[in-house]
Length: 395
Image 1 (cartoon, rainbow, N blue to C red):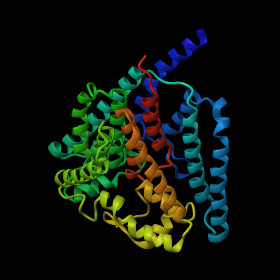
Image 2: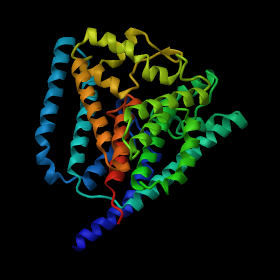
Image 3: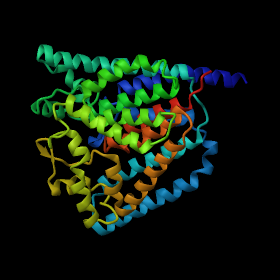
Image 4: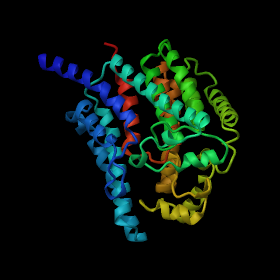
């Protein structure tokens, strides 16, 4: 009994730092072995496994892990044999996917929960700090005409931040805060808002955070963030009548707000939202013809460059949408799997009897729209924050 008390006390004292520093340092990559940006997220994922996952329960999900891992490996062997792809690129993508599978099956074996108060304190401070940095970036550019803060980590960042300059060239400054692009800043803010909403389902505390959220959405000008926030609020609505209509209204409002706040940025072919939502349709239509079972793992950059789709002022080489990525790598199997998963999430939202459940399932419906790096540890870390918030206890 004494050991249990000490364990929970230790967990309570460490969870605040786990979330706060994880969010703040999420795109800080002081070293890049073999060109891969190594961030704190990698180590925090393992911390999550150690603290929250009961591996004694893992035997019940191990068969599913082995089956899916085997199918993934089988696809890789076929890709290497049929298309002669690079082993390095293949294994990099393969291991990220395996890591993702391991994480999600581990979430089914939760063995501990954090105190809601500890989670809420860390989320609040992380939200305040990230929005503060974004506000300072906006002020520096619009008042002083400088851009030093817009590359907050300098050469130690996760990725180069040329998109900030591109957005200025299109007539609109978009803050990135501590992250490599405005949409990723929007993803972090959306994650923190969802965490607050799930802890305080009465919306009493959350109203205080909405001031920061509205400011952050304005500074990031992210269509994905606008849309996701509105869809989550609709999904948490106690009345589920006309749920699809409400979601369509949320989409319409998000488009309108994005256009008004971003100086028609969404409508421009140079805009990130266009490349994230519309432009990939041409890529996917071609890939389904060329590779019905999916583009070989690790072959994304070469294939997308060969199609020649513009992303801003240059040709794009990635897919910045997680749902599209599923189809890209797994072809018609991905189409079917994605359709089933989306229907399941919508079903869970529709039958949820609490605000908390509705927001939780809507989060996983919306986050793939923010980025194509859905298998990266940084993306997993944000999902961890939401899972920990969902499983947190009031006492």
